[in-house]
Image (cartoon, rainbow, N blue to C red; front, side, top):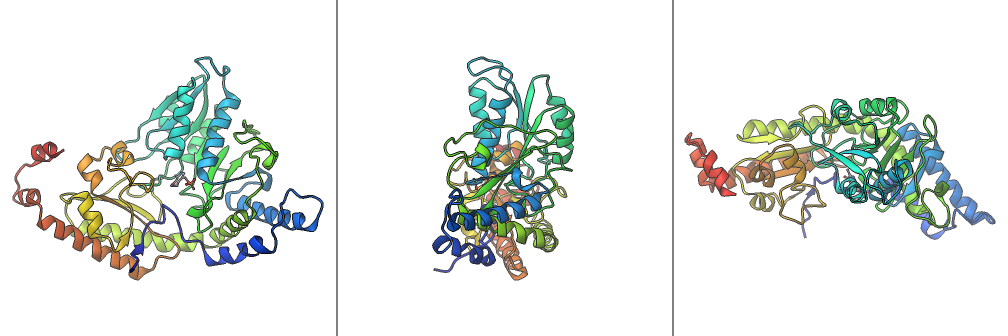
Length: 410
Ligand code: PMP
C-alpha cells in the first residue's frame, strides 16, 4: 500500500528516532520500579525519571518538583480542572453555588467535558465565545470575572485552527485577582517558547506524542510558589507524584518525553522558522490561485505549522477523497468520525457548508519542502476538479446571487 504523505502533526507526531533510542534500554535492561528504594534497579529508574523531569521543567521554565507525570493531556486536563475546582470550591458538594469557572466553547473535548461535568455538579460556568479570529483575549476574561470565580481554563493554541490565545495577559489578570489559571498547552509546548513563571501560569497540560515523543505519556505543571497550587487527586493509591497522581510511573514513556523535551528546546526555533515559511506558502498559494478560499482564524496570531483552510463550492467528503494522497484532517481527529461540522469552525461563525469543506493541514519536524509543494499541487488540482462538477460554482462565476440557494442546500 502506498501511504499518503503525512500532514496531520496536530493529531500526533512521529516519535523522533533519537527518542526511541533513549527509551529502548528501559524496556528490557533497566526495568526497575522507581518506587523500589532498596536496590539498584529502582535507583537506576529513579535517576532516569529525575533526568526527564529536569529536561521537561527546563523546557517550560518550571522546577522539576512542579512536574507531575500523567498518561497524557486528557488526564492532565482532568486532574487540573476537577482537582482545582474541588480544592478551591466556595461551597461543598451538594450545594448549588460551588464557584464560578470560565472556559470557552471551542476548547478541546478534554477540557469541555470535565468542565461540563463540574457544571452538572453545581459549579457555574461562563462559556466564552471567540470572534471570527478564534482568539480569546484577556479583555474577554476580565469582562467575565466575578467575585466567586475560582478557575479559568483556556487553551494556549487551538488544535483545529492553530490560533493563539492571550495566555500571558490572562495569567497576569488571574494572578491579580487570585484566580487559578489552567491552560491546555498540548499544541503549544515544544513548538513555542514557554515560561510558566513570566507567563504567570498555574497549571499547564501537555502530551508527549504531539512533540515527537511517545503516546500515552504527558505531564501537568503544578505551580509550587507564588501561589502554591493545591489539587484534589483524581487517582488515589500509592501516593506517587507527590500524591497528585498515584500509580507506578511509566518510566519508558517518561524517558521518551524527557528526551523529546530536550530536542524541542534545541530545535524549536529552527523548526518553527522553517515551518512558518511553508505554512505561509501553502496559505498564499492556495488562497491566491483558488477563489472563495479562506484561511480560518487570525492571520498572524497562529502556530507556525498548522493551517485550516475552507474551500467554497466543493463538497466535503468529495474533497477528502480527492486529496487522499495527503494525510490531513477535516476537523479535529477526535471528531472526524462524525459528520457533524467542526464545532470549532462553527464557533468562529464559519457556515456549515464551508466547515464541511475545510482541511486542517499540520506540518512537523519531518515534513520536507517537496512534500509541501506536492500538497499545494494536489489540493489545487482537487478543488479545481470538484468545482468543474459544481453547478453552483458556474452560477457564482456568472455573477448570479446564490446566497438563497446555498442556504437552502442545508
Ligand atoms: N488537548 C488538545 C488541545 C489536544 O490537541 C489533544 C490531542 N488531540 C488533547 C488535549 C488530548 O491529548 P491526549 O489524547 O494525548 O490525551
